[in-house]
Image (cartoon, rainbow, N blue to C red; front, top):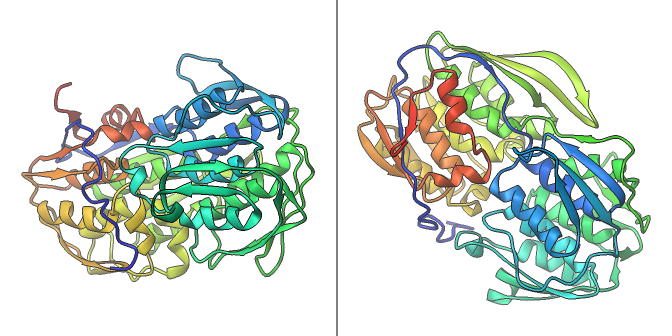
Length: 456
């Protein structure tokens, strides 16, 4: 099945959620945590800048904390400004100020962290080793290793550099033109970050546009990025990043918002508002897909936070119908498809997703794991090499145990599906939601979702 890897049984992390069915409509306003992708990037760029940067709206999930800890391990002073760790002050050391870490840099479960850091470490004049947990050590890294090797970095790792741990010896890099085989913002960002250290203009093209937070954030730190009409992205290094005069504010995470949006769409009589959600077009694929399925989703109070567009998102329940997903929306909704699968399993008609083989190399094989979990709960879903075909039903049977395999998005997606089940669903190995959304359960309970930790 193409890029499929043995990630289905990747992680036993513990934690059991018991969810559904919802006892009534979901109501209320929700403030979800800050954007995970932008939180990673804000720490990286602020650490590599000259000067002091304040960041507000930081997501204090385990993945982002791993990124911050890496820079602390390389000599960056990071001050947490509140107990919740949503605001921090980063004393940047400059592009060439990082120090060789004493031990292995641990990315935990964070794929974004390790792939972007490959670009950063490729530009350093010291050797470093980066690794992660059991799940991350099974995910493919050749996609970022290959371009930094072409730029002049020496990288060693398992399976010829495709698997963690990776040992990276950087140094003076040369610019390249990289044509990415996969539509991946992680690959693009890795190349751009390595390009900060390269001699010449680094350019790249990708098969489809992907999330552009790196391109939007680099100019805040004084580094222009050019995007041509044909999609070619160019970076001519300034050899210096500078802390912005104003604090960096991070919008609320659309991937986190999507779980509640789908739940409200499915539970009759629901009406919720998600506050100040990022609506960047490259992250807004979930809303386009849900709109195509007939969801009642309205944008209110549109504005800008830094270089990122945001809006309040009001979601009211309504009958969903299935659709054939536009392939152009796949990269822009790649993280949200687990919960969209849940929506499709309860929509009217046949839902078809293609060109989404990238789902197989996430924290788990998300096509296989979601198909298994939804099928156990009573859904009609057929797994395909690059997606799925789902026949919608009026409700799910529930009354079963499923395994999230240590994948945060699988666990939360099954909580949403359970709201329209006839009886409870027990979701095992769900503790991984701490990597991206530590307060998911408390927020879900606040609007009326039926979910609890087994031992709470």
